[in-house]
Length: 395
Image 1 (cartoon, rainbow, N blue to C red):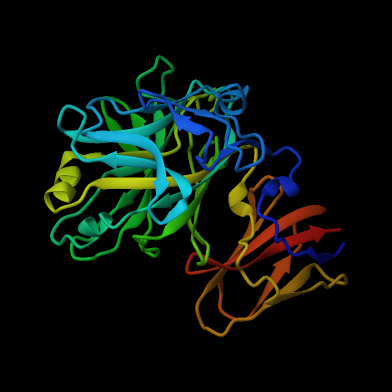
Image 2: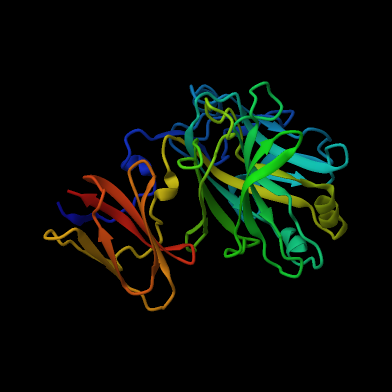
């Protein structure tokens, strides 16, 4: 048995290596894609991308997907809206624009969100979407003496708190400003259960990646239903023209711990802007409007697109030396710094099967113990950023 390099991955979607993966839907909000008159739905066929690109036939009629809608909870278009508009950064591009000028929910909070509700057996899925924070976010970044602890941009419900499903649980991805004297905006992630109120059972806060204002970012997320040992949520972020960052890779409960028969994520907010009246009022009172731009929305079933190797990485800066006479191989890579590295090896289903930490040299020994024959993926991290990635074949 030997470990060798099969090839370097330059493809962007995991369907090329996992036959069970499925692209459910994709759209860039281009012409022939429109919001309905009341602004609470999106319909049409986005001919700028290949099928599946029909908002009704492909998305809502998919056996694992329920209904898509836009929800506000209150107010009118003078307070909030979601509209397909021309991209302010590129007049040839269409985007989905979330705009929140006043608290539209009983005066205490604001909400603009997309909903995919009534899903069926959605136990493993990935999403890819681009997001843009316009210059109004500089008002939040430059504010001193205050924090932003509640700014949700995505929620996964397993189960929802307003239904009769029982055992309410949610994962919330947000943008926070934790340091009142810093101008950094960072991602935050929580897993919450509901008793008499919502409370965290786990939380991950990132402080290494400062979210830029005025730049398009690609967000890739992966959800897998499971317990503390096999539940998983991953977030990767790639700024346009920049380096891909793994922000979170959480293994923990992704359903309520008391739920003995979890049945997938029945409710899901893939694009969301939800925060307190304090934040909304502060931005408006300082000459701005709280808003987000969205583009290039994709949903995948039964795959982890986050495992894809970045398109813009130099994937030729490593060598693998198989040693068929022993139980290990050596991975050698270019390393001009003394920073610690972490190597993660994944199986075809996206599960971590080997983690090697505190790598300080330009070589790492990969023991073959318990690695059966088959295809594996590896990622080498430096300060949570992927520096090298590829795939390996055990024979």
